[in-house]
Amino acid sequence: MKACSFASLIVVVGCVTSAPNVHAQAASAGPMTSSSVAGPSQPAPTNKQLARDVRKALSKAPNFAVSNVFVTARGGVVTLSGSVPDGPQIQQASDVAMRVPGVTSVNNHLNIYTRGY
Image 1 (cartoon, rainbow, N blue to C red):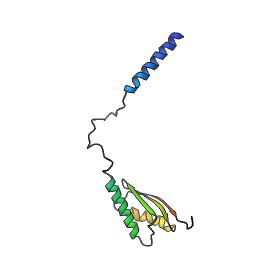
Image 2: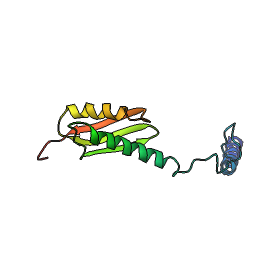
Image 3: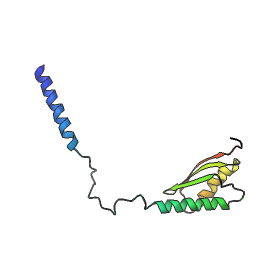
Image 4: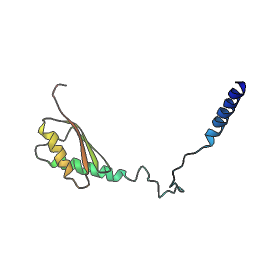
């Protein structure tokens, strides 16, 4: 019994001491270079420009209140948030955004603005 406990203790101690030296690596991992890693600032101008284009299109849409609408974009996916004064403008915003070149999909999180709240 004591021999079994001692052997278990040796195995556990061996695993614990060798675990910090183990590193996970993907099968296709090679040396990392600066050209293979995208920097956080590289896609930002494209995303910002797409968001600006959508907001500009919304501002030109007939009878659309864009003042409380916020537009973000990431990789072609546009997210609309904020509020509009009436229900039909929620669908109108999605339709206008989908017609902007570069938009692949729209996440519409617009709500109807209620005065006094």
